[in-house]
Image (cartoon, rainbow, N blue to C red; front, side, top):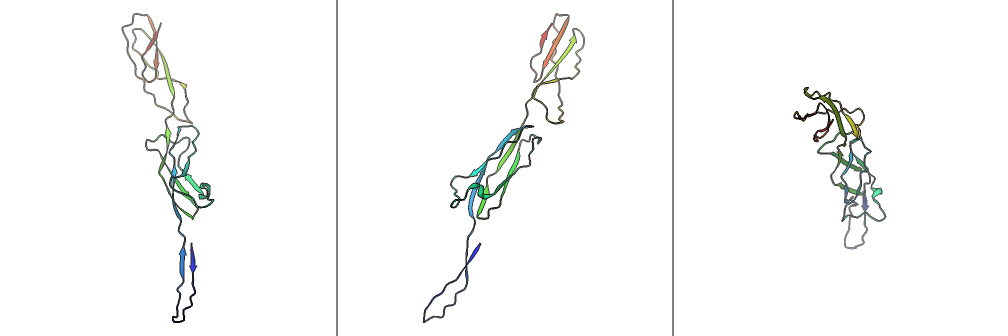
Length: 178
């Protein structure tokens, strides 16, 4: 915003003509730090925090709230896990400040679930898997479907008539019970 500057002068030996000047107030430059934030896929989103960076001051009784900062991030509870995360951006409406924002990311972390499959086979027969499993810890989000690939660890040198195999996800060793 500019303010008009005018002046008067009395000098008998001169005819002074003043040109109108302008005093311009420019916005105060500051930096606002936005913090990286994360949440687990399918869970409530975390609040995104920010603060005035060290070495910068607001004028008089102005507060960070007076800057009218609005943070934006295109992320929801069902946003996919991305290794590069989601950009957090910011806008402001207080024209007394020229705000530069630090870059920040919102990361969606993978949701942990534990899966178990229990299969039964008869000694001497070729193992057949029906590819069923149970989620015994954690849960899927919304209508999500997961593709599970089973690996069968073979043990044929067992001297027992009927074997019950228990397969644990993440390729734990097969347990046998008779």
